[in-house]
Length: 506
Image (cartoon, rainbow, N blue to C red):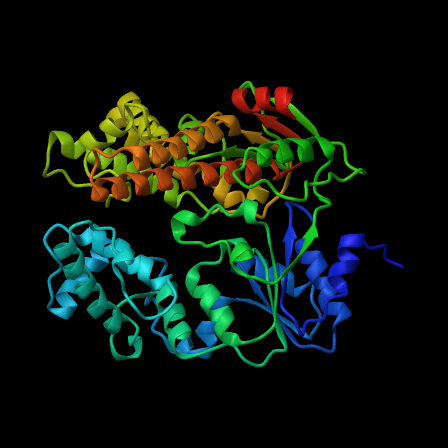
């Protein structure tokens, strides 16, 4: 007979006729507990919605015939009958080139110089709930220009979602938005949702519109996709919450570090992680001289730091999620640099939050230094026009699967949901104390604005929004640290600041 923990027994006792949520820590057996739950209630037909296709495939081996495992996108794709779409029409995301193509196709011009803002507005609307395009979707501050951009985006959207009437490329977000507006999930008794902390508003709307009982599982402290529009559904769903806090992935030492990181959070968890007593986990200082072996992950906070670690590489390697995003950031920086000297210079499409090389240089300096800008500047400044050749070398040494190599690398975001015996965290991860300090400073600045009668209300609101963004950034970075350190099973190497934190506060 299988011995369940008291927390698991409480979950299994809940009927799938009523919605509830499971607040589960890293490595606490979310997927296996859901499999046990579906077995317990095998007379009820369930739908398991996974965060991505890989997780859905893995889940199918865990569940019986009474549960269908898939992504929300695959459900919408099948429901809308999109298998007949022409090959090549589906693209991962829109870029500036697509906006220019839309202008030509619609015979309508967006406001001059607004293509990037149009793209951001369209992207924000596609992942939002409902049909109303508002000022909040558009980051443009000028009221008149904001209205003009929204007019263009509204027209473009009406065209895009009628994809059977044109041949323009569509993204997965386009057909999912169409599904949210016109259809709903049917044919099941209840829905299980994994990684619910990463749901965006359109996915949450789809779940609510189904009218079905929801078994929602996730970890609000692994919410690290706010920049993609994710909302913490764990907090927004007002249903009974049950904890799952015993981690099976790692031992007590890594659990202690994870709990220490989360104590610096603005809202620390009510249930601390418990380490697996059967596992011996160790936290060590990373000095930059460790040679990775099998089942080792080298983890960077950013694509830029990941590139730095690979720039002089001589052996094959694998990067979780591929090298495309990393290479695009470097190409964008190199293009900005070249155009600084020659505005007519050709290069990659800019995907960075800096419009010019001057803006990038400015961002790396001052009180609120952007660490990404600083590293990009260093890379371009150090390697110059040899950078293109180094990128070609990296591309040639990249392997599609981790089975072929000893060296596996990733950013914290791409490694989410994965686990390795050994994890090496590079030096672009800051201490959680640093992020907690920055958060407190932002809160103090907001309070000071409120008390200052010299500033106009409009100015105060703009500055408050900036501080709110900084507070959110600090929260996200503490979450990223938690995600990063909980990828390790047995051995975790951490950089200077985090090791000091471990020694002094854990």
